Image (tube, rainbow, N blue to C red):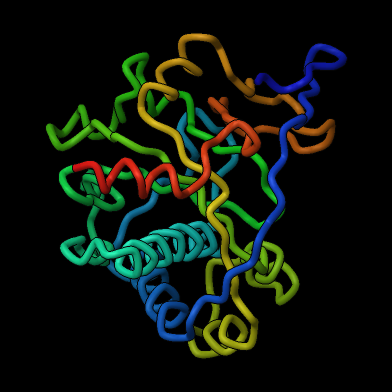
Length: 251
């Protein structure tokens, strides 16, 4: 289902899914915090702009995005282990330089899972439009000859909103802050997650072909300006997490 369009540039969500909180253990939080710190302030590389975006991202925002994304990978990994998929590899925590990307967020029984992350109140799975072709392939990996094909796309939401947390402590818009102070703030929170939904690459091809697109500079829910164009699927239109489990068990 497409978003409701009003006034030529305002898009409104119509198919929501309630956030159902599941606790995240402290070890996972520490691991993701350490990884994000090394990725942003160490030898790692993140783009300062979103694909097709105009706004330059400082290190506070890059840290928030990296932490949230890796958290989504780890909770998925641990859940798959609980469901009996013991051969799955642990999420990649390698620190890469410019131009080097990890091939897939997770791989299980030969299937690649692209894991998207968002705050607990989000209700869209978003794909930056300039990163994906009509075949549902990831363009940056096409350029360097690594894996561009994903079989499943999973949206994981987390609470609290790491971006709002960093803003409250005046870390979000800065490029310099103390690692121990940051870790203390993060570990002082009770972190939870949920699986907002999953879809196949076939669905991604469909939404790209049918123009499920939030244009650059459009307003989501009439107020959030989109810095870059994004393909989208509403959470209410995604399949439940158990669909992924059932598909993997068939293999």
